[in-house]
Amino acid sequence: MYGFIFYLMVFSAEVLCDSENCHQNGDILYQTLGCTPIKDSITDLCASSYNCSHREELGDFCFFQGTKLEVGEKSVGGSSCNGNCRCQGQLRFTCPIYDCPEFFGHALPEGCYRTYNVDKCCSSGKICAPFRDLASCEVDGKTYREGQKFYPKDSCKQCVCQIGFNGKLEEPFCKLPSCQVEVRHSQELINKCAPVYKNSKARCCPYLWLCPNESLMFISEGEDNGKTCQFGDKDIKSGSVLRTTIEQFGKLYSVKCDCQLPPLLTCLVEHSERLP
View 1 (cartoon, helix red, strand yellow):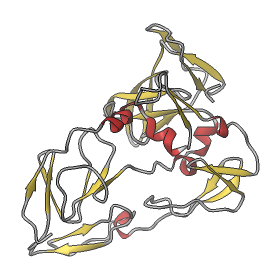
View 2 (cartoon, helix red, strand yellow; view 1 turned 90 degrees about the horizontal axis):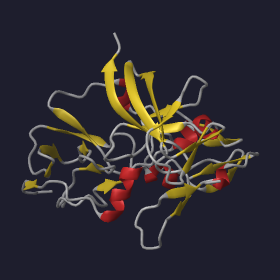
View 3 (cartoon, one colour; view 1 turned 180 degrees about the vertical axis):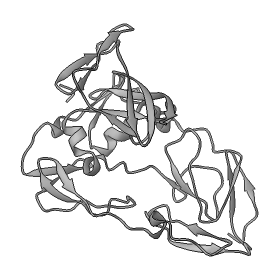
View 4 (tube, helix red, strand yellow; view 1 turned 120 degrees about the horizontal axis):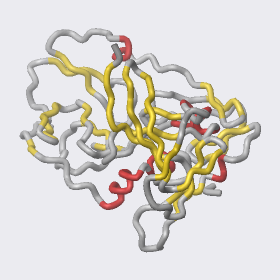
């Protein structure tokens, strides 16, 4: 089983390094889960599947980023907005809800903007006009002021404009997200639901989840390359494709799912439209 006093610097986000190309496959999810990469060849950069067998066992414990936690132990929230979540056993967590002021629409004074730190969830402060002696970062044709967040196109990196940014999507300016799926989507993982991604070029943290039900039908559209993915209690071979829709967030999402990076199915949003 698979099992800045600073001059404006203008850059396009640099071409993704080779390891970041693996994020196009959806590897961040498995890295978050602490799964072991499996490669077809030792020279391959990206994994062809992952071994997540440590998550097959249920008991009075949880896993967080591959580390086993006993009941009552807390995860380390880091930059996540999930805070420190407490293990309830059976791979499930309960989490506090962050109450950042910006989450509740607290208004800023006119002429001000919120600033952020790449390692933190909530805003770290504010900067108000006149905006003098501040760093500016131009990425993908857009200009950001010092302390503002930006999300480079077709990258999973989350960044904050700071003094010294030279266009490279690296620390301390940028970091990969911590998906925290174990604490927010434990039931979906236990049920072997499929992660749904919005951007095929940067499959970062899942945007939605598609869970098994008897009405979902797979059809054969390609060759079987030997890969098998789990979807609920079924093993889905590569070459089998599922097309369906998901209603969520006031929208109707058309998705396509197939076995690309086991052990879970991979689903991509092909189209979305707002519901009436």
